[in-house]
Length: 364
Image (cartoon, one colour):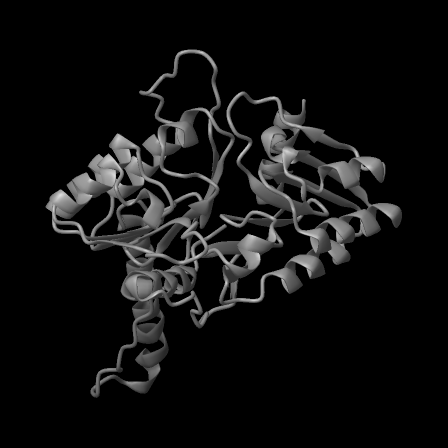
């Protein structure tokens, strides 16, 4: 769970050093360099001192909402934005959260370079207009057929915030959502490149086709993160590969699940003895193409959510170890039309356990 950020220092031995003192001096210098590196990391504002990642879930409530709850998704994001030092790049499908807009404006006013790209259908929202009035550059995806459906933010080219959470009041307090925050400079570089393409080419109508510089990232604890962006990346092949690799279990939480190939793969694994369980957003199962009915008829223990808001997750957990998450609904549109992000996280059972706990809570 340690950060993959490292610092190093190279020192030349003094020309007048005696040979017998050289090992001692070298050890001393190395100790100083290591100590500087540790202090540098811990001294970074907002550093994830407990590890290189954090997972958050919305606290859904039908009672009066406690808007002062420091653990709500919008408050967690505001706290992160307050620590930004140099740059914030935000690709947000929808922004109507006043606290988040305030935090972006405050960052801009203290000299942080803030940029936003949003979906064209939502560019006239009041909070987006507030950002523009404050001088924050905002771009939209124009008249593209698909949606600019991302919900990610890159802070200081180091921290990546992504998941299913739209920066809206309902997204934080009424809908089931998840966010994962990962401290990784290479991962941040991948998302920054995606943002730059979206921001610079948005009005030209070009599809997302970012070259992913670090498709596989390994953190120091062995956790691996694989990055995909649609429609520029092949997203269906890695998804099918993970599903087909399942040996014991597949758990999924799906706002929209209409992709036949993914549905067929899950039904095949179920027939092979894999424990496949899922929860669907109830209102989305009215869709003619929803996989819910076919799975139910095949005997899979799939259920409908009970939340009066939206069960907005887009998550698959394989063998209680691999987590698939991001903005990516399990649909053909997500694969070939929309601008989406998809992370496949392997080798971290603690992260998987967090998502499985959310699954159990929703299906209880």
